Length: 494
Image (cartoon, rainbow, N blue to C red; front, side, top):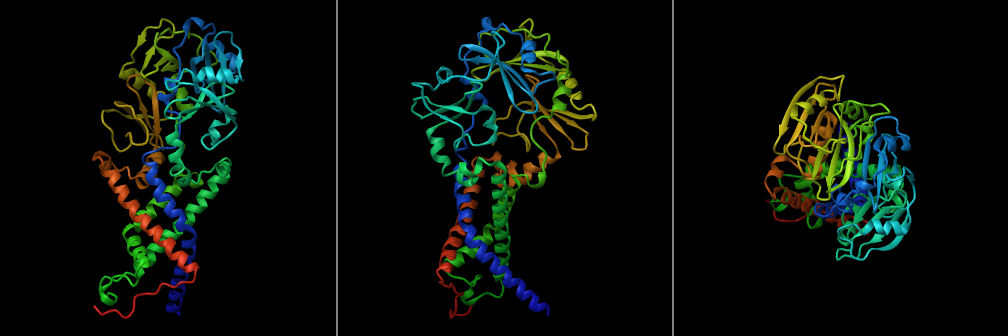
């Protein structure tokens, strides 16, 4: 009875792997090949340095509205997520962003709310971009392949403007706020059709419905996980290292079946961990905590959360500043000034004098960021480590890491130069770093330290995965055409 159950279970194992594998091997091949493209060409996004480089220098003599007045006009009565001053072509504007999403743009000249701009104004904004040669309006888009995600919803519709440069750069300018929302180049647009779009199953028609897209990817990758596990299990069952098959073979198969069997055994663990980590990237069941600062931490660090939080602010003239961000740190009002090259400095918002906060002042402010927890560590990182490195995004160094004894064991990473909180990390996010980043991108510390070790390992493992996938496609095609692939028979015994 037991043997009959084992045989039946094994039979179903083969059937499940065979028929689901036929349906999913195309996905496997697509993911391995497109993943290699993604290593070198990322999905288009507007980086902070690109955004700052496209802003003109602030014309302080035009600023007539104080930040506290802008806050009131925007309807903000508590500490905002963000309060910035920059130029919209030749008009200084405040951008007030709340914690529940949404942003209000206020003219710093007369206090009017900016909620619509014309195509001519969008072109004028685009002319300040360093790549602008002959800007021209290409289209007015509500949603397209590059602006498909919901984060662009508050900015839609978007003016699509070609800059006329050699790289084929195109800007997306919000018709509501005048902000540059995104830029793309011809190379990014072409290569992403071979990279991110197939890899993330990202066609506009599907991705525009976020919940549906998430369910499709979760179920597709989940089914592929079943294929990977069952295939590796079958591979082990059919492997003979001691009592070998005819002609001393360790596999009973030949041709494409042999390639599929052996490559699957060599890369089986990688295929499984890669699929599993990709599945985890969608945070099934909300298993991992969210990114970014919480309002409670930001308010605690600032030391203020009242309607007059910016009552003392005034303009802080700087000849090179393209953006001013008004903040409180440890109960002290400050302004962060950025120039077009991305250099950031602190100034007093009333006197305009440069400000440098000491490490003790920053640590004192950090203590108040989490009033219900005790600060248990404070150290400066001068070099990258396992949790602070630059593979996926630029990371400032040196950086202060402040640790707390709350149940989540929160870390805050703070710039020692500007006292800005750069990142929040906890046990959940650090687990995600290993379960997703390490297993999916192979950004293990050892591989990151030895260039180009990571690239070589990824290429080799991806090649193995591609062999498994393509051989599976061939086998599946033959199966569908009713061509049976049989074990090798009649060879000379070992």
